[in-house]
Length: 120
Image (cartoon, rainbow, N blue to C red; front, top):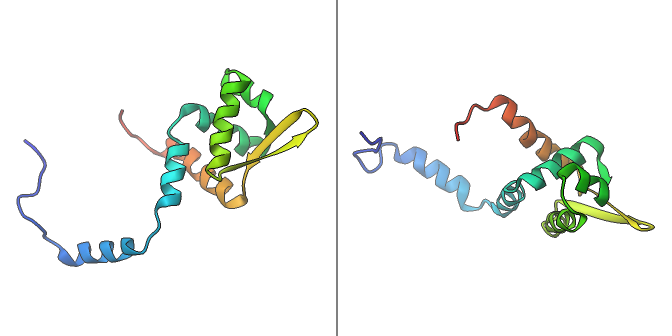
């Protein structure tokens, strides 16, 4: 048996409230963050940067068990999306999250698996 409503709309007032709230909402930042979390390597980078605030590319490559080129690709993606920033110190390049708001959001998302019981 499929779980589908047999009517069109039961609570039009609820539908109207949600539609009105969504009408002027810009969801683009959430979509970008969702894409950033859509790759396990980038999630590992988030864990690392949440733990130490700043890490060099070579150390992050070791965390990912990946090449520096692959790691740099992920970091450039995060930087392009506005989630991470970099600074150069001699020959080393260090990455961190762009701001405290991003860090707080990532902490919340990274803590979610502890409280979720999703089935895959």
